[in-house]
Image (tube, rainbow, N blue to C red; front, top):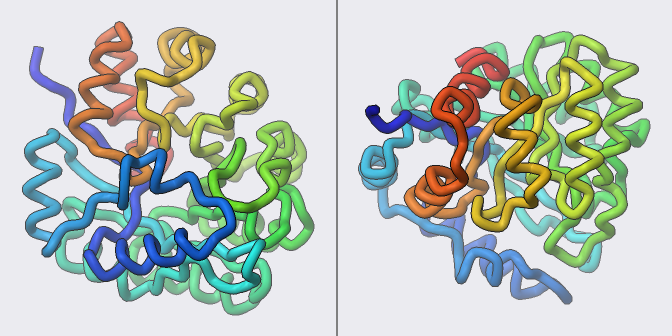
Length: 282
């Protein structure tokens, strides 16, 4: 059977300049395990064309690039502040291979909502990705609700990192159980709980099973380290609710390890491709 073409629902800008900027910022934090988890800096490519070559080699059909923003709880400044133009260089030049995800700043709600609407309506961005922890803001905080209302209005999904955080920030803000209130208040908003919710994977599984509009992000962890309950959820009752992403981890190794999980072929196709097409309207 031919290899499944994969869609990576969550990645970042990969220019050497961007990667170096994030690497320097991480070294200024009191704690940052991100580089350790990646085995060094995230991969970078000297050109977008070289990145596409790597995608083709790994059989990755499309990558969603996030306008990723992270605020430093410890230093009270931007840890990562990706500009829209840094994402647009991918999506405008190669729309068949890349799509954009906007970001959100709960300190600047009005400006953030205006930018999200501009990126979705004028540039075809497919959703929003948010990392709340450094803002000292929980995912169900009132400052997040304007974002959810805007995404529901625009008909685009919002992806939220849930579970613990590798930087010097409070992990409690991303407990997957907090999605319970959001899903009740925004029943037509598609929500992706990214990063598996670890170590509260069972919370994310329960919330995904409870609500039709919540999906499980199988990203940011090498598949060989996935919790057994996560693998079982992917292969059984969660097969229509799971979406794969790399979060900057190497595609070839991740996809090989997914092959080694023993998933049913139709389930693997949903995880790697079909569910992303459905959720992000690709």
